[in-house]
Image: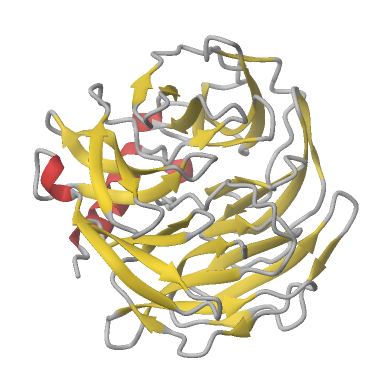
Length: 387
């Protein structure tokens, strides 16, 4: 088990991000795949126990959001960062990537592993997040120190759907120190986007996806709303079910916050370029203070924003401005969130040792029975849809 990259990724974000985002960390991206299943699935949460050993808690879902522990859970497992497609669970310990088969009971068994670190230029680098394209065909990671000094890349892997075997496909030939987040794919699965505030700067980046899964830098240069003091520093992107993106924007002047974080909206054109109608006056502010994660519901109608002051929901309205839906659903610091396709939202509060579950529609929010669930040092959550 390797923990050095986990520490490094936190240091990188603290150094590179503005002080507004100093407590944020690179997060894994829960799968954006839309399953046709309407039956309950499984929820997996990584944890570090009192022996400093990584393990994965597994739960069965129910229609009302209540969770039932899977027999044998927690499972001994390598890796802290998680992702799923419709058949496999994957994790990484920042050096290796592991694949796990999922039994009908929800129990997991490791089937394959690959050393992802060997494909970059530095033994201090490696994968610090995992995410799939919308179809679940290709597995990606954000690769710290992937190329040319302190620059990062994105790697791509084939995950054999029959055996779970992992094989390296390649990495982006372009690279940047600003690439510190997972990517979010728009509905056509041909473009993916991320955003970061390296040294208080403005970096929204996009990639085109080929049929074989390869990513190519689009070299986009989108416009930004004008801030009343300084400039907006972007962080994280979440796509809806069409070609629109939510991106958090924090007004920043020389790496000093000058106002509350707001939510902007961008639209991807046919060439992959992004445009926006967002302004300082039509973007809502967030109550979560330092943003840690940003995830879109399966419907593309509700946006979850997690941060140091809690969890908040917004209505997402396509190319129109985002509108406030709720206040803070909890005041515990929330590190990462994931949606299923049964109107459930899962939120990990690491410091509090809790997993929150909410049932969310476009008109109501209700905490699920039994929520929050106590977990020792929870890390990342991924939702596996049942077949």
